[in-house]
Image 1 (tube, rainbow, N blue to C red):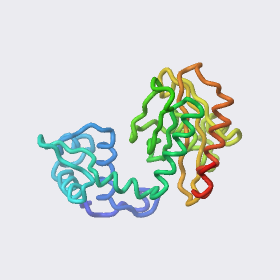
Image 2 (cartoon, rainbow, N blue to C red; image 1 turned 90 degrees about the vertical axis):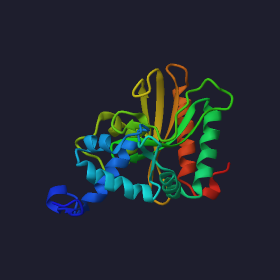
Image 3 (cartoon, one colour; image 1 turned 30 degrees about the vertical axis):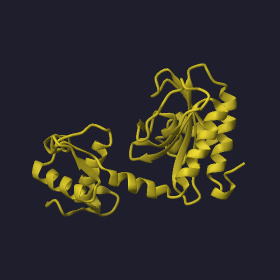
Length: 238
């Protein structure tokens, strides 16, 4: 099969897909961890011929989706940031404002995540202004969707399945997830699912040191601010 052929429906189980596009997205997925790589390193990780990977990278570079360092290593480009910001459009400023207010009210770090395949990806993160020692979470950080509070909250938005872990089933009943130490070592996390007005799925989470937070209070505030995010933007200001 050539690199430009589509993946047959019988093979993918999801209908026809573009194999070349899937390979390009797989390359971006690897670079999203923040580690720069050469075309040879990417080819080895993707199990593809180096010439195929190089053509993919050149195309992505033309669209500023990847950038090349002086030593020939590739990283995610600024074009990806532009695409990502278009996903939430004018709501970005409002989301950050809501997160900051939630952080200040709870003295915890607030993060807003979206799902990307098997990861919950941080789109926005804020720390309480009055607690400089609070944990910092980098935008773009990734957490396993099936073990982290942000990810489990995202999974609770999906239809019930026999493969659901107990935390997901419980989240559908209670409206939140509570984890300790996983994957945030030394931290507790509470998270709730958020379905935006345009149908996009996200999660809102609070992170705080183990045993250092009033969990019922955190959950109550989390619900309040999650509801604000699912309301029209004009109603976000209290």
